[in-house]
Amino acid sequence: FPAVDGPRNSIWLRAGRLSEYWPQGSSQPLSQTLFLGFLDEQFNALHSTNTAADDLIDENPDLKEFLETSQTSLVLGAEWNWLQMKGAGYTTRGIHSRARALLTNESLGSDVSFEQIYIGSHFSMMFGQRLKLTVRGELGYSNAPVDELLVSDGTDTVNLSMTRLPDQFRFKAGGTYSVRGYGFEALSNNQNGSNHLITASTELEYLVGDDWSISAFADIGNAFNDYSDIQLKAGVGIGFRYYTIVGPVRLDLAYPLDDFDNSLRIHFSLGVPILNIGKVLP
Image (cartoon, rainbow, N blue to C red):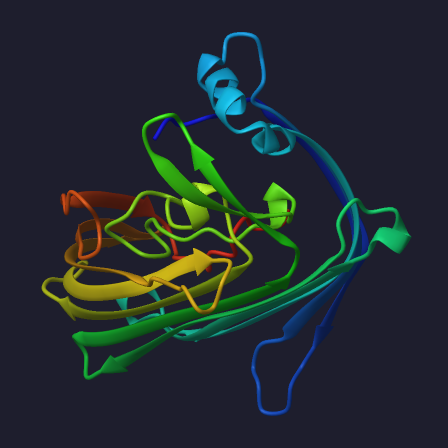
């Protein structure tokens, strides 16, 4: 099915207040940010050289409003970040949790009303001096309108599930810090981003030398619009780690279990793993 793309321009501004709280018994603070954000997005796949878009519109006139969009959102938001880690290098362990809540409404001047919540956590623990277990999970939910379109290119027909969420706030899965074995942000409804997110990962790592380790992992997840049609994608693989003063150099060889070509994918990263929040807000 022909891919349609075009320039997407956006302006995201936010102002807020950052506070820190010390939960009882914790050695590290819980940070909270309350903010007001303004987002303006423009997308245009109908430029004069995009013949694929022109052909699709000839066959599917209802698709035009999704190929040329302009959206404005005034968003009320809150974020929480709690880092409870200890150790250094390979022995770094503990838990890192993040959460986010967003709210906007047409009565505030936004083009689309929606609410969204996200919760993610990354946990590591040591077994002896050489064995480490890392688990990670994410949940995202959005209450936003979704359009279901049956689109044809004259030969093939596909069902497009299109969220009305601004692209800035759409959930996408896949990639180094999400579901390995798949491309970066390649997992969602028609790769357009989705309302909801589920990901989970388990990794077992073994220290081979002073700064070297090997690992085996299994990831699963997807971004989707309909809880009755989640279609979770899984990937498994092995990894190699070299620990430096700026964090681990990570090389993963991942095999997708639910991809059409089932080809091996290489993932490379440098530094401490972060939680992947769809598109992380600045």
